[in-house]
Length: 381
Image (cartoon, rainbow, N blue to C red; front, side, top):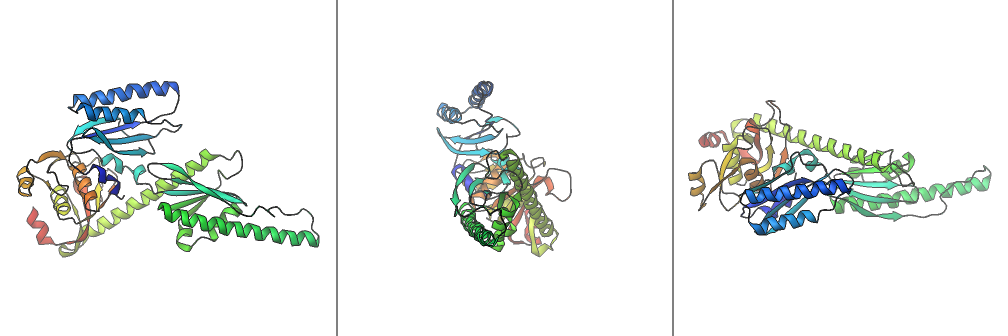
């Protein structure tokens, strides 16, 4: 998961971090939201948040638009203003408001947040409607209309009807090519990692066949939710979310495969490290390519020491002071490391939290940008 969206929250705090469920737009849900918003802001005040920041949080929550789906919201505020708001495809595992020196960003790495952007095209013989589904939003992306005549074949079988039917086939092929061209342009414009075509099987396959080879490989077809009136969009959205989550799981497994291979390399060629001391050292040297976090790991909530700069992270307070941190403060290890990785162009992935030996020791690991030698690693211990 790319972390560039965290740039607004990498400066000095303290920070208010809020995770909540938006809920549907009915009266009962509105009353529950009002109570929840009040409780969250009260919690911030009790933890020591200043009035200006608490007020900014409340105003941001009051502007939340409910929807028919059970989705979630994460927002981060400091110094009297909301710096980042992030929509969530699903409700957060815990509704909470925290006031701390660092923003609590690790829950944003949950698998649903790692699901790729998907471009959906509802297709028929005359054109297509496009919609983009991402971790934070789902939005319309326009439509395209091809030739509208001739679109339907003749019922008789004489010579003139056969000639007319050939013209219909040509129209279908031209429209499929037009849809595919627009789909390819939108895919690249929105950074989509996968596409879903919905509609008649013939029309969807015709569009898919006209896509460039690299896009054709990442395109799936759903039998639900075409352009026809009454098409079941709920089943189509279920197909889209299932495909996004499957791709997210595949991506996580690929990262774990690289981690296992890097951990097994010889001392002088090791490209993966695990445990707080080794990962802290890697982020300080801007060597983290991908951070691996298991929320159930013993080290995820462990305390580290941080300064004002994102790479001023240390296991001990004295270490942080030697890095130039004038007044280092304690922080959660997972949040500190994610923010450090974000500030240095790294990525992060949340890995399954089981007791398998395949996950990083303590739940914290990293893939490196360049190998780490054995003697160097031993020196840190």
